[in-house]
Length: 178
Image 1 (tube, rainbow, N blue to C red):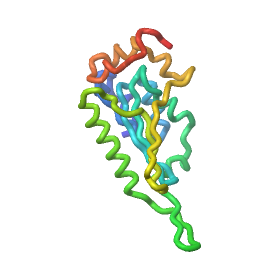
Image 2: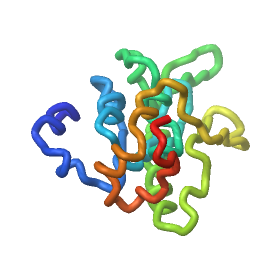
Image 3: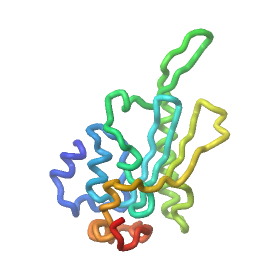
Image 4: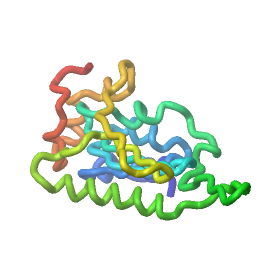
């Protein structure tokens, strides 16, 4: 079922999970998820240019889904796990199924890291380029943008909806509604 149908047929208590995995964005589900005061979120996705990215969103500490994905999604944006392959003078668009599998491995690895002391041990964003030498991984902590919806989803909201979740203690915004 769609995210909207899922939320419509359940109470907030039935959305009671320690981690949400926002893995797709058809019907702009990422924005809808962010508007539902999510707990810790972990995701990874592929691009149409040999890329794979990993993301984590700790409420009150990291950027949110709306910060990360600011634009409305078009059908072309949903093309993923592909890349141009050139053989001689011929260039084709090729499917790269290993990229999707690798994105899944990145999510699984972060779920394992979440069980270890000191989580989070890595920045909240990473980008890997399969086309290059694969000797550099871009990684940094993305921060909340001023005016984003998550700045109004302060500690009180998160404590009400997610205070009992395993990762709520990671929330760092304090009691201010930045």
